[in-house]
Image 1: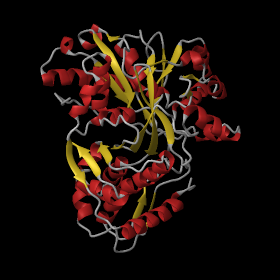
Image 2: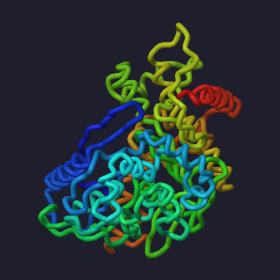
Image 3: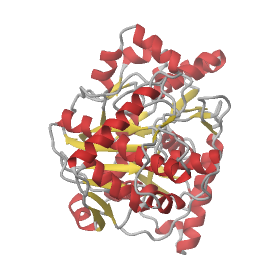
Image 4: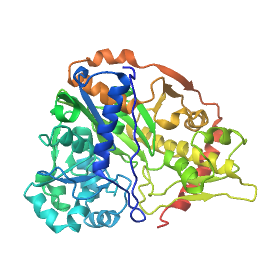
Length: 471
């Protein structure tokens, strides 16, 4: 359960139009091959020594490719992409909101894969014809990697990724005919859905250097929940990455939200489905990246902690980073980013602090909805992701939530969850053995009084109202 070696590789983020975000699927594939080879070299191990491969991925990102050639028909449409907002509005006019929520656990939003598939097929009638004959197929990034690793012999996904497409019935566990018809998505395109821990075929020796079984697959947020060992109802984790994603385990019961949360499949294991409630914050670490790359007011993300600590408070400056709309609990595709409360006394430390605080405020909005839906009072929040190394953010998060924030020693929970699932699927571990692995690095206890917490949250919510509907 410890890291042996790490290899990472950035790939290009493509922004062809405002609100559009794309990736090159071949670049994703090549980056995976390169990091696989690099990590083996670093660890000085041979491919045949690997017991199993686990895959975890950004979930809703949509890839459509030719089954025979294995080549993508266009760039991947990334989860953050907003181009299908009009398709979503058309579905709402058909009064499909309630059906979508009851069947898939989701809300109608451009975030999910279903409308992205429709957009691709609508743009390319020749591709639609091939999709209907089964020659062009769809997958999220996990499916794409499985297909490439197995030399095109396996077209599959797991329950957690299927539950993010807006096409999957999370209760009956099959692709939903009514939603596929509403979006004109041929079911011949869709992957087989398998347990998150179990067989997904074998990576070919000519690809990986030896035949290696693929035994664990889960979407990134569900993998992090599994990696944090939040395996009992009421346990929750928050991942601080590009966006922020809080998941609370709800057991074998799918809890339908009344407060703008998503009901999602956490994972499937040995024929048993487990569920979670999820809150999605679209922009978290990306707000700090924007201060660095877009405004140039910091040189590195790590500078933000010292700058935030250099001032006594936020100077009444609030930053709503709704660059791609607002997620939970607002679901406003027309919201846009806004900074309010600026005066001549505002300087860059205030902007940096406001950006960090916005991550914690958005998380507080999600937790409030989660506790109302689940009827469970959270005792502590387990955290992971790149931004958890920022002690200012973690302390402010504990203060604004009023509960302890627990940072584990191993914060690469997403990769760890994929490894755990692969280890279980290959018989390397039992689930009981995993419990001993989790270790705490630091617990941040709340220090803020209730009156100050409520004052700050009230001002934050005023700022959010001003950002809504802007586009």
